Amino acid sequence: MKKILFISIFSFSLISCQENMSTNDYTGNEVTYDLQSSSQYDISGIVTLKEKRDGTTQVVVRLTGTSGESKLPVHLHLGDISTPAADVAALLSPVNAKTGVSETILKQLSDESDVSFSDLIELNACIKVHLSDVGPERDVILAGGNIGSSMLKSIENGRIGLAPCKSE
Image 1 (tube, rainbow, N blue to C red):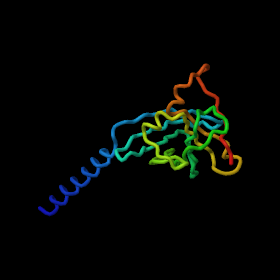
Image 2: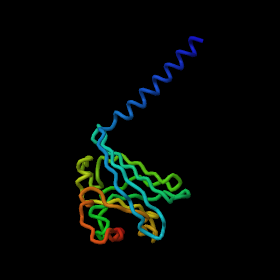
Image 3: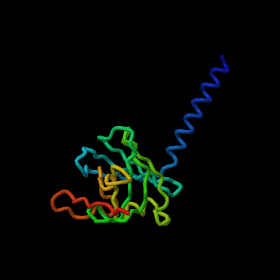
Image 4: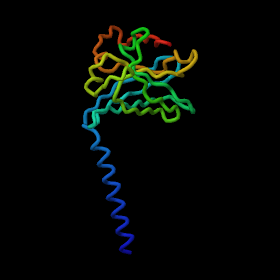
C-alpha cells in the first residue's frame, strides 16, 4: 500500500513539475490577431504570438472551417495583406486541416536573420494560409490577416483588399 501511495505522489509531483516548466517557458507577453476569410471557402481564425524566455516566439494559428487530411501552408509575408507579390519572410508549420491548428517556434526569418517577439510585433507583415503549396491552388488564400505594424494601416471601408502572393 505504501508503494502505491508513493508512486501516486511521485507521479503527481512529476506531472506538476512538467506543467510548471512548460508555463515557465513563456514570459507572459502575447498578442492575438484575426485572420479573415479570403476566398470562397468559409475559413477564418486567429494567430497568436507568444514570447518564450529563450528568445523565440511560438506562433499558433487556429482556424475554423477546415476539415480533411490536408496540410495547409502558412506563410509570414512582408507587407500588409494588400501588398502585391509580397516576399515570404518565413515559412511556418502547415495547418493540419483536421484540427485547424499550426504551431511553429520562430527564431529566424527566411533570410536567416534572427527575429524576436518584439521584432514581430513591430514588423510590417501579414499571415496567409494557402490551399496548397503547389500548382494553381497555391494562389488560393484561405485566410489572412495583418500582424505587427500592418495592423496600424488605416482601413477606409473596414476591410483591406487581399493581394495574391509572389509565386516562384
